[in-house]
Length: 106
Length: 113
Image 1 (cartoon, each protein chain N blue to C red):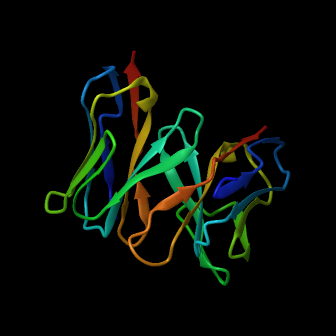
Image 2 (cartoon, rainbow over the protein chains, first blue to last red):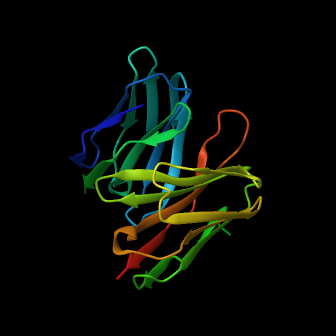
């Protein structure tokens, strides 16, 4: 069974700081997702990646297949980035991490 | 209109009552899922369906049933609600082919009293 671990569980930072959220998993996967859950509860898919790196605006996601590790970076963080960020991996089904709660202070 | 619509958004019900949560989508996706989210536990899969004739149990299916009425509709039922089914429920869809991502509904907050 694949285990998905995210770190940190909670993160508070000042506006403008560079943010890194990490995700590790235990067995090989076909794809990894990063999701964002807003304070109101809605979930948005940010990235799906199986290798390398993807960038969308101020968000960057990387994955290292050999090390079974992915990171989500946020550059020039802003209070509107405050949310829970969830990593999910797919082997024969999708397994979700417990999420990282990010709070950006103005 | 949202791509994945869940109804109701919020519901309070009494123990023992039957309740249905509905999900409809306009994405044209074949695959639909029901998840529940509890504080500290993350999202857990209840049921999933890869097409209209295909229904599969997830990791926590006990106490729940589903119906895939059409490609676009996937309903979750609690036959006899109990308080530990109080949670946030999400419907999600994904495409069958390629490296697919998920589209989530806005969630249904269910409270069983």
